[in-house]
Length: 321
Image 1 (tube, rainbow, N blue to C red):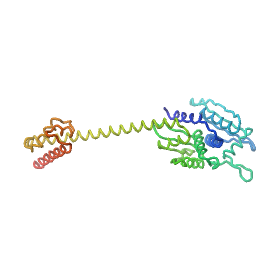
Image 2 (image 1 turned 180 degrees about the vertical axis):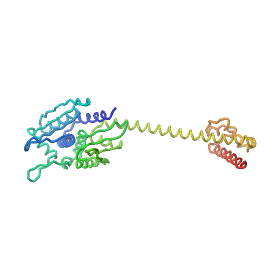
Image 3 (image 1 turned 45 degrees about the vertical axis):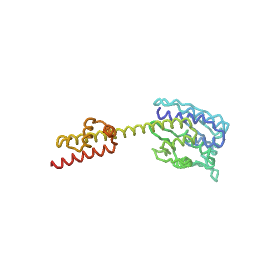
Image 4 (image 1 turned 90 degrees about the vertical axis):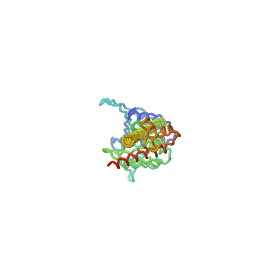
């Protein structure tokens, strides 16, 4: 599954989500216009809203939001993107005859000054995200309009690309009000609000209501964790095996050296048995060697005797220098 498909599957799921409350619909629309819309001035007091997306489900979502909130049938234009065989581009246009100015005022994008002039505000209006449900809707709209999530099999990364520093700060604060730890980075001329930890991304998907994507991500996270644990165990066992083999080689070298110098039979009786067993069973573990002795000896007892043999070999070497 590539990055765009995990993103588009998540967005398609969110686009089908049922939202009843008008305040939540407005919060989602405000974020969508802010993230993927533009304002077009077509004369004195005449403003149009253009919202562009490559995802048909999101285009339908914007169409539905406008219909439910303002009872307007907007025009959706489809542009074939022949360049690089890219996806279609869907353009939703709301002109001044369709109450575009009121929509921009309601969503807090246009702010009225004292002298009846309007300015564009890049902040998230507090009254739009008063309620917790509206906060969640705004973040959902922001994700639909300018968010993406990477394929979790490769990496954990979720981001929102916004053109305004003010908006990026407000969006990051809004996300972090749910106990998350989003950060902002600049990329080209954009401000990117991002989350990088798997657990935080799961929490954010839960906040915006992408439950199927959340379950898929959790499955992948568990699989990755199991895989990492298996690798860790294998690496650990390999390291232990290497240590055992190296120790065994060293013990055999010591015993062979003793045999060629003073002879194994001249060792104390408790060391003769272990020396012979070690030479005969070169790959056996200390525990296995201990079981072969009569009477059997524990692992630490075997280790103690082999250490004794090492000390004897060292003494012989010292005496021969």
